[in-house]
Length: 93
Image (cartoon, rainbow, N blue to C red; front, side, top):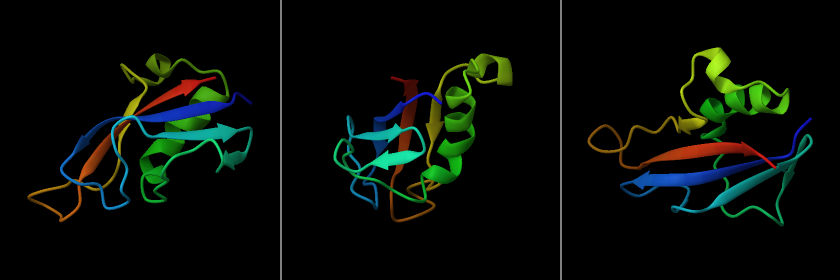
C-alpha cells in the first residue's frame, strides 16, 4: 500500500473543522499519522476514501473516470450550510 498525502488545495468560506489551504493529512499504510498531519475532518473522509483506496492500490484515477485526484468534502458551504467546503488533492508519497 502506498503512503499518501492529502492536501487542502482550496477552502471556500470557513471550514467547520478549521482546515485551511495547505493543510495536510498523511496516511502511512493503514495508519493516520497524527504527528505529520495538520487538522483532520472525519466527515471529509466520506468523499476522500474511494480515491484513497484507488491510489493506494496503484490505480490511476483517470482509469476510474476522474480527471484529477481532487475531491471535495461533503459540506456544501454557504448558502446551503454554515460551514465551508474544502477541495483536497490526493497524492502517493
